[in-house]
Structures are given as C-alpha cells and as structure tokens.
Image 1 (spheres, rainbow, N blue to C red):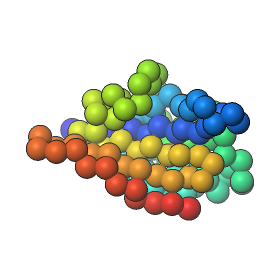
Image 2: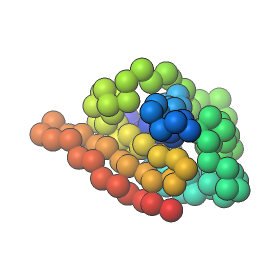
Image 3: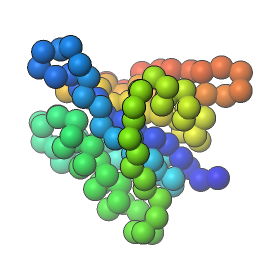
Length: 123
C-alpha cells in the first residue's frame, strides 16, 4: 500500500568499461511524482551530472517535498542492477533507472504476466 517507486542513477566511468551505480532510493508516497522530482533535481544540479552527487540531491529534493519528514524514504545497496529491477519492478510505479550524463529515464514495471520496460523521458 502506498505510491511506491525505486530510483537508481547510473553513469559510466571515464574508461567506459564499468558502470557507477548509486544506491537505490525507495519512495513510499512519491512514486507517481518521480518525473517531477527528477526535473527539480536536474534543475538544482545546474549541469552537473555525476551519479554520486545527483542521487544525494535527489534524496534531498524528495525529503523536502514530503509532508511527513520522518518516514517514506529509504536507501538500499544495489549489487546487481538487472536483478534489482526484476525483484522490485512490481512496486506501484516500478523501478526508474536514470542514465547520466544525458538523464535518460527507463521505467520498468512488472505484473504477474509480464515485465514492461520503457524509456519514459530523455532530456
């Protein structure tokens, strides 16, 4: 019960051989507002797009937009991004993967019958 979603940011190291993946941010009451929260985060980042700082700023934006300041946001480690998507895509609003530096947002949702992945926004 809630309006759940999980958001993960990723970017490539300069040698393009490894992905840098942020911790997953769990939103219990703001899942349907993820795109608006990402837009506000992008605006605050003012051109900076490294995943460590973007994910921290996103958590701040989410917390600042909550009515209840002591609940509803969680942060968890992601060991395997593909498995994380499969395991959590059945949240109300799915899993959002934000690829940096271009801010491409891929949303993965899952029902009992199938898994759906779609690019929902590219800035």
